[in-house]
Figure 1 (cartoon, one colour):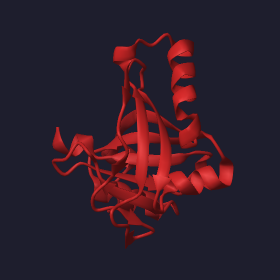
Figure 2 (figure 1 turned 135 degrees about the vertical axis):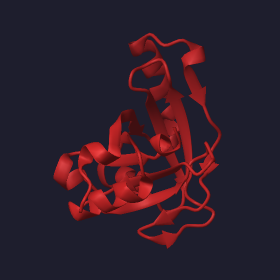
Figure 3 (figure 1 turned 60 degrees about the vertical axis):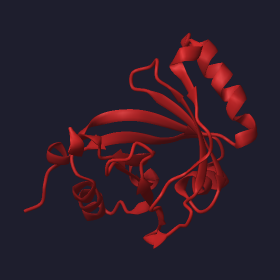
Length: 161
């Protein structure tokens, strides 16, 4: 028997924007000013290549590079990501649509159940990998723009609560 949405999805966890690397700092300053955020509510991470990354089911080594600036003073949190290299939904989106809202991230109780639930509805995974949080936490991006108007990201934080 198939699981229902409420059996798998806990809720919206984060909203993500994509911008070219050369524009990410200006976007960050605009977000800080517009939303009234302080410096301690903004985290500018170094470029990350997520381990165990896949792109359309095939290994992507060392994993696509992404620069992330996170804004934790908002509910839900917000992030601006800039693809650096490799194959990813980040590069795909930026090349096709340009800068803008890339994804809504959902916390899920099971990575595998989320993949299956979305695939049953014709929404397939584009890329995935191990989160920098470690401990078995995984993220995945799904090709949901045509069906939902935005890309879905899942992260299985609830699996470890």
